[in-house]
Structure formats: C-alpha cells, structure tokens
Image (cartoon, rainbow, N blue to C red; front, side, top):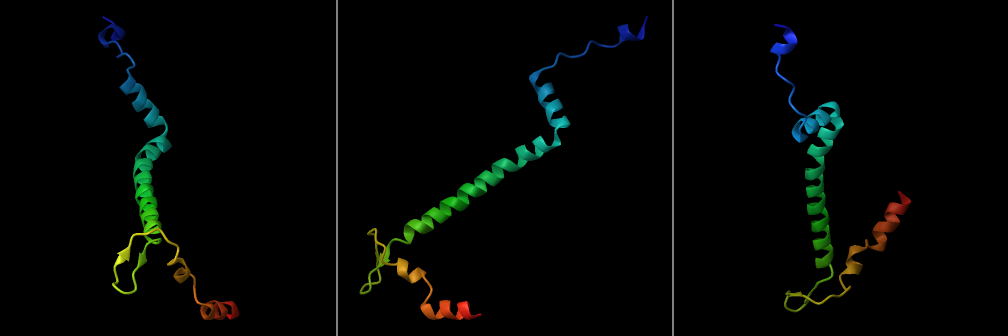
Length: 93
C-alpha cells in the first residue's frame, strides 16, 4: 500500500476556505474589515451631533420669558463672532 493511497482526498475549495485563504494572505484586508465599521459609526455620530448643534444654533431665546422660540432666525449668529477688542489684541500679539 502506498502513502498516496492512504491519504484522504483534499477537500473541495469552498467559499469559506477561499475567504480564509484571502484573509490570511492579505493582513491589511483583515485590518480594514475590522476598522471600517467602527470608524464609520463614529463618523455618523460625530457628524450627526454637529448637524444637531448647527440646527439648534438658529433658534433664539425670548428676552422677556427666557423661553426658547422655535422660529428659524439668524439673530443669534452675531454672538458667535469675537468682540473687536479681542481680535485687535490677537492681531498685535
């Protein structure tokens, strides 16, 4: 009896075996597959939060009652710019 006859026949290359071989040969692909979903998720959360803050920045506060007025206005936008004294001090420094 020969050695070749005693060995079992090799298994057919299935999809799982080909995928495992691809991932074993390309280590960067494993890293990419592990890092892309969390980075995308954090990007969605970060950009969604920034968009929510931008949307809320257009609301205004009533001066008499202190209640938030849900009308789309650009009145709070000038408060985002620094006062002229601050900019002149930074320009001199």
